[in-house]
Length: 581
DNA sequence: GCCGTTTTCGGCCCGACTGTTTTCAGTCG
Image (cartoon, rainbow, N blue to C red):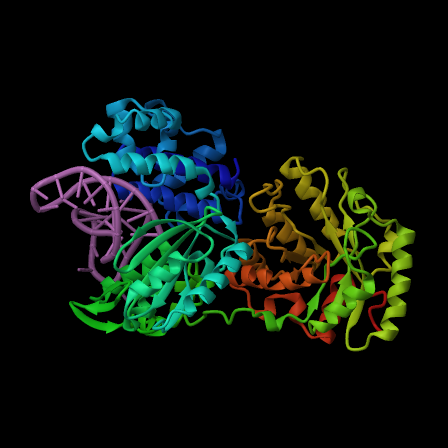
């Protein structure tokens, strides 16, 4: 059973317990466990097989450790079977309607016998819902609206898309007179790969002009609520945007509060409590006395903490790091010196080889690798060995004309379904840089896929594995691959692993990056550009790496050329074909 | 169900807004 499946079991248990009105802290324990398990890079199957002590994991105690063990060994959990028998599965969907929580959903089920969304719709239309205690005509209307938007509202969007809205909204609100400070917080500010909603924070004395202007933002479809300090809208795209207006002495506290994550805030609050303080979105208080809140630094300082970069605020390692003075100096976009995965119009890219080199140079890159597809990737017009060799001759010519940038002769060689690589060893040996990627046979078993990738890492010509999980955010699940084993193999052979900066991919993900760092494996952040504009996605990859706690020294393509050359030489067993001028 | 620099029992973050109430429960973030 995979980690994701175990996490799903715990989430389902939490859903049912919540619906049944169980102790909310018990529900939270299951949610926390689901999160811990779902985010782990190490496989629980392996940990159990090794007899590891699972209670060392955060939020996993004796009881849940035993349940994980049972799930891994038998694939089932008696507790869940029993719970499922008590509540029809479709009833749980009721809780996913905005405005319906466990209490109201339970009332609908118990008093009206509603077990699915269609019955709910009919009951609202027949005005049976408003007769229930605690419900009314407005609730009924809200449910009907909620039914319409439930599907689109639950969809998270890519960080890159959220960034466009965030920039527009900032520009839109900045024009309001009296707006002193303006920031978009939430998971957007934490740089999470997908974003569920936007939290806009504004400092102004008077909230009305800001809210009036906000309602006029062209993408707003509906104002969901509007109060003194808080307003929520839904955009035509379905994205919800929350606006909070605060006074300047609360800006830091509110920024901390609305940046989150939820779990990070819970830790902050308990730390405040331990120190006899109270922290909320308005500030830090001792009793009713305001202590701090103007800036984030000020707020963290009252809790004996340094300022923590938003990307790390997930209650994973940041508090341990901060307490022991080991908070990393996170990687920045300006640290990036090279880009080692890009395509040209020789395969499925749009720009010519020369245009790509020109564009890379304009962006200040000191070294790049041209890595077109190999022949197996027929859809992209992958290159045969002789075509590659011809391209590399072209690169020889270009090297004479372009100074100040090193152009590596590379290839993105396909890892074949049956194992092995798509280009012969002799040709590969002449390349400066080889990315091996898996494009076919994505439905094979975890063992086979992991085996194919581990074998590729053992190949002397291969430098790195491209997009190592193959996922496309919101479109395609990752293939079954044991990342732990891949990282161990990369460590053993001194190879590198890619963090693909395409906003749709972003794999390895943050947790994988952290695990690679622990194993001393260097990450390569690459754009996988298919056009000159494609080179601009590097910043998304940097953001993901920051979430994994990576510093510049953990990333191969931050190295100056001379250092990079040495590392590459070592990775290829002391054999470097050219790369030098 | 977890967890321990107040604790192995008794806590577990805190506030805004809405709708349905007549002082508050439920939901959300």
